[in-house]
Image (cartoon, rainbow over all chains, first blue to last red; front, side, top):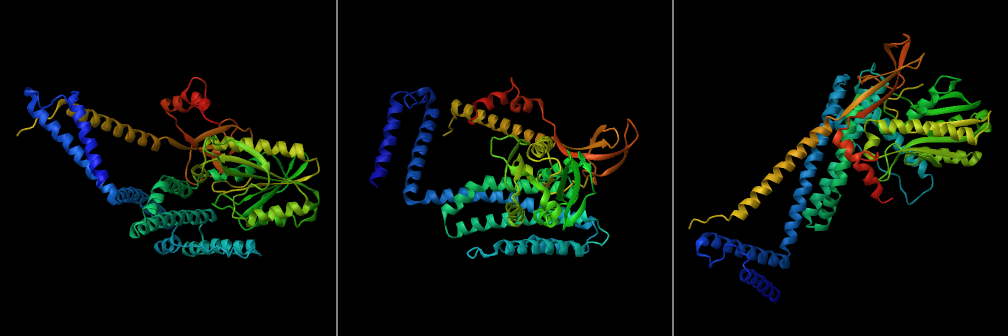
Length: 407
Length: 114
């Protein structure tokens, strides 16, 4: 109360000072503009009253409630945008299924939209990779079977793969929408201003992710290569620029390899099978290739080329080279190559093409294509500098092969 | 009592409304420009002489696909070598974002913290 009184006193004092110094052009002692003067007085009086009320509300905690309402309204408006994206993705998926002759498109969409996978137990690390791989592969195969069963048997493989990816995008958008709505409703229900504030603060980032998924729907439904196709595109280019020793063939599910002669070296190019949307199983493919003792005994290097997330401020399409396996999988594929390389004492070279998260899942841009050309040149340089004629080199183009066929 | 609104308040309100109208108009215009800026390009290359032709993307195109098109130079079959999105940058956007000396982007890159 004491603070309130002092606040009002300050307001009155400020008003008096301004009045004395002639701040108000229509003050009461000016007879010609009496009406204007009274209005100005009213405005000042009302603003003092409003600020006094606001101070009182601040003490009573009501302003916090008002702030919560403002955050809630803003989050709700963004959620409506994401909900619109979900509906757009759903109608695109339905359209693609119907145009491909699917028997029960509504049922397929409903089943995949809320599909989920439960991660393995992490407090027991033994065989976690195998358990994770089992869960991921079962999920992939299951969704593919749902879509395949509804489509006519004559449908091409790349349309099937693109439809599965489109449905996965719908699933991702739906999960983002539902999770954010859950946090908002929970925050409002439990009057947890901090929870709502966190959602409000993170909303621009979530909206950015959702927008990227929404735009990816367009690229995937048309079968256009995406930013993540940089790896398979680099593999295709290097294969095209080398002398073929064999045609590309499937080695494991959705993964192909071909043998080439590059500068008198045996170059084995591995990539996901295109032009359908799939990342393949590059780790398993390398493992199977190295079962061949002639390859394993002469192997001099394993080179991986992949798309990588750039830091803010970095240019899209710039490349960087390093050591290790350039692969963004959850673990099962990457670990196979790491284990084999350490067992055979073979160096692992990595080349990455930098891009943002949005660019990675949207139609490939000119900058990324230029980056791919640079990555191919870099790979050739590594081969020339680090290996000798007669050696075998495995080059893996890691990423989604949508819109990228075989050489 | 019929109160007369002071001129300064009227002017302030008018100015505020004008600024808001201009900002909204500019916002809508830039959003439209962003939507109409992208074009998907398919690059087709001759398998014999390497002659390159670019055209708009058509559904069914993919990198590595052999096309029905014949090379305008030697008549050999052609193959799709690239598909990418071409961004049609406007001149104003180019002046503000290009890193070439003389453009705003160049000076922006100089003052950017590395």
